[in-house]
Length: 374
Ligand code: SF4
Ligand code: SF4
Ligand code: FES
Image (tube, rainbow, N blue to C red):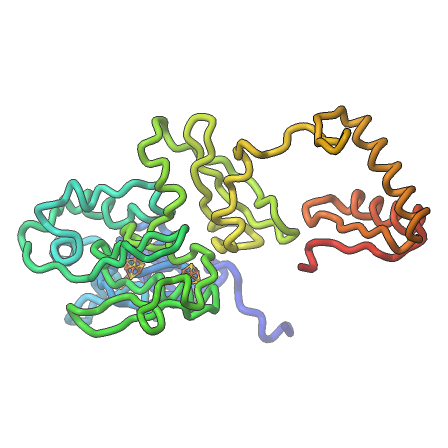
């Protein structure tokens, strides 16, 4: 970027301001009212918003008053302009939001069944409690507008990872948008309109017969738990509080940040870290769902060597001696190219260097690779 193209990175460096709840605050050109409000810790509620996605403006819960405009505007899609006077929390705005919440809750989650429908287990997904927390904040239970509910559950979808419980869907389309905008997959879409709107796959197939890669991003952005993590749900009744431990996915060399969910000593699920520098909330199917190996009863905890045709436990010294003898024999019997090594993407540079040195100098072959290329 040339000097003349450089935009100020700190809003304080610009003289452009809006008046936000009585205080003049700076902003950068292109920022929305919601982004500015977030920065100033205003509690503007949202439902269809995910800061990783293009703002959509469908739920209207983030409305604010702008002086001079007759109707409230959606703050997530309205760009700030110089001199704008914005009020984020007035009595009429809060009343408007509460009525919207009542409509959403009554239509999509069944008014009378509030305790069964809105109390969402956090194991369903990372954002699964957004709607229930807002229902608590606005003290709504959907009974005022109780009536017909929309959405047709697809709970029988035959796949091991994602529960599709569209009785809880509020048609925010975050799942569809994250699938398209972040995963680039377009596996799910919207069919019908209005009250009959339904999230679906191509030809209404099960997810495993669609383009879905089971990355789980739709699950983790869903604000109602309509999409839920089937593997984590196995432990809904396991006693204990859910603990979160920040870690790095053990599979490839990308180094995606994850929060490991556990109850007591048991790992029960994985959440992608929205602030992970390498993944920003994204994971692949392995990082998201393939964690059972950690506590699998078949997992090897000691080396095994074959004796009289049987695999038996051995010390590390014995196992390494056996491996060394095997390598030497392979080279002697079948030549130097009979040996091949793959370095782990999780290994540090020094270990990868040592491995290629071991193969090149020890066996005189270039048969060495790294799993990060996969
Ligand atoms: S399934 Fe969840 S994320 Fe998708 S539209 Fe429904 S509520 Fe929104
Ligand atoms: S799991 Fe990933 S690929 Fe499959 S529908 Fe959800 S976002 Fe799309
Ligand atoms: S969050 Fe702004 S319209 Fe939904």
